[in-house]
Image (cartoon, rainbow, N blue to C red; front, top):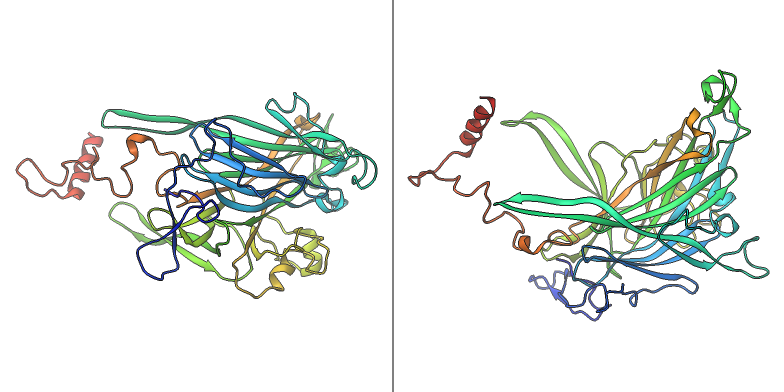
Length: 472
């Protein structure tokens, strides 16, 4: 298993056995992601002035740690994000993670807002939480009630909700008469921001398995002034007189990756395509990885995902550590701003660029380094190594009677998860610690390769026999 960041935490890096390969393996240590009292360890974090260090130990023994701050425009900012598999030291995953834009175009063409850059999710738009909104721990920072906080006093307000909850069955395996089972849990961090009649929950969920799910939830009220016709809305209220306008929530998250500490990173795209050929029992599907060498825009597709990889940071199986990006459900979109400046067909589901401190927002960016992600890609022909991913998730909202009032929360999200971060699962049960690769002893293969007289058995014939038994 991966055991923590060497050098940074005083752990020596080991060569993998091939001289001068440049590849490094993380050496085992005895220190876990918590102190002896069971409190989360945040001593390794490098939090900026005014940021709040956070840590959470999961029921599996794995631990999360990171810094929390609030930006006037972007709202919640999580930085220096670390994950520690059970009984291992923390390893940095992400340097900074935050919202980068939310554009709301109405279907009748009469309204367009860019809520992150125009209004902002921080400052006075970020609301103080009560026990009704947060049943967990409410944490505070100095957040202004008026303006941007540059003048007058800035009170400390409880704006961050930290909650842990059962996430259901994590795994179950019944083999050799023994049941191996455990439930999982997840840690949720959320804030609430009010922009006009809408109220947004910015949320990040961290799983005991190392997964991360950024999400944006919308509630509040339908626009009281955006009513239209049948082609552009849905009838709300008595009869068919009033059609509340349909609209989209076009959201982009910005993730500045930091696998390890100073590791170079690469990006790969995975695709699995049917070949049109048939195997002995099923259609043949071929998977392939394509290296993404330069800043670029990409669209989602069936059986497609991306991974950010540190090729010189290896797990105990000599596999490079990486994190996978999965889109899930999305109403793909092109920003109206981008259509105006770059023409049609410039949308993306995921984009990758090199880090630039000036490139903060997905659209309407300022500072002379480009106005949008399209500009960042077009203006950089260098090798992709200090990776920033821009993940776009759309939600097309067609109003309904049940939206009044207030609206039930509706969500848009995506997931990021470990791929070869550890050599086995992050919290492998003791009785399964010896299973890594082809099992040496399994009830499903034991004795199947020969009969009672020691003669070899054709396993394909055995499968056919089992199929016949099932039909009988």
